[in-house]
Figure (cartoon, rainbow, N blue to C red):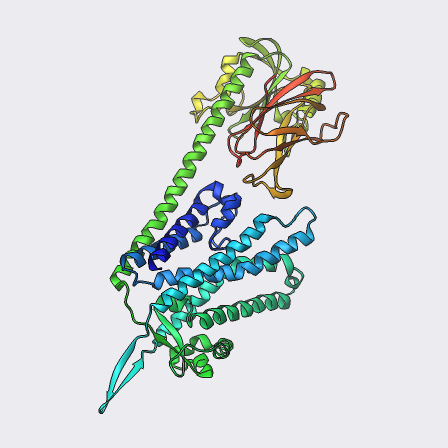
Length: 566
């Protein structure tokens, strides 16, 4: 039994770490089963897929406890009982919460249905709680109470050793921390979802907070001290509760002891030897025999643990940075190749947006005549008027109207495609290497190349769904996605869609006529792998001209980039 507990605990700790570090586990259906404890609210970065380092710390501690238990020949149980009790109470709280939460979602939203995954998850919660219960029951049975013999004349009296006042104060403080960590994720969800009206007043907010603390604290002590005659803090200090006869207390005794804890200043009464909730319930906290690892071994173990956590954190940050840089380099290389090909085929009627890298205004150059080797452009600066720059960016349709009306007022410049290629931002350049115009302040990088009087499409938003349930921007485990394509140019309609991945695409808009320029095109994709987006689609404008676009994304975390390719 002891070997099984050690091995299962170590494997469970590894699975918990996997659920934190590997993105597939985080959002897949299996990921929910691997979240052995729920500490998602505390220490959780708000970004999707972020690593919860409080959970990482717990699972490292859990793994350490299994190692210490094994290497001490199954005598060192303090840390292991603490971790198992944490999981045990977390499952006790999460089981009714999960059932209630799912039932509320089903009753509130028509698209949400009960499914087999929810039922399996509830069974999994009960199974985990039962495993922890059996393990704690076995570990407790291996511990004996510490005693001392006192000689009174010819009579030897055996007495149990009472825990010190400072140990009792530690129990009060540490149990409060454990209770807060376990309850916070559930309490936050309940308060923000179901009792918003109460939160509008100070009295209502105080009522809900103190009421929840009261209920959770009663459950915490009733469950642990009734079943195990102990609590997570007492597991760590190797102590337990006994009645006036030195035996395991009955339920009614623990009930009186639990409610006595709510006497004002009870938590500090141990410092003065009063022990109020002991006195009112005729109980006492006594020590167990210490048979495990020495204090120096624990000290070194925690020192190594304290070093390991920041090392893991730095390794994770370094790995994420490296991944992001590789993706960024691929995007820059593709963008550079795309812009260079567009410049090699540059023709009259195309407009190039040159974004300022300093305090100067952005520039727009419109090809008038010539070839890529030597072409004449009209130079338009943003400070020359016009309302084509909007909050969303460059509006091609408005620019075309402004340019047609005022183009004779704009300066003419002659440039080559090779010269313009220096404006493509391939990497960080020195001031002397950057593209600039004679007589203008500042330097520029190339932002886009568009055709005048043509559509200007961009991907504005992506939302994901899983089995009909809205998942927002979370693509993991999704089976459908809606892509919102905005158009800041001439009106168009979709005439052809070609996918280069296993995703199936269609236009979800029901309009058959040309939409207004400020309306959007909705594309719907279905499939089971949104890690990479690669799609070509053709649109037709009001003049019957076709324009082919390609939409690509290297990562589900990035907004797909949309480019005109023909």
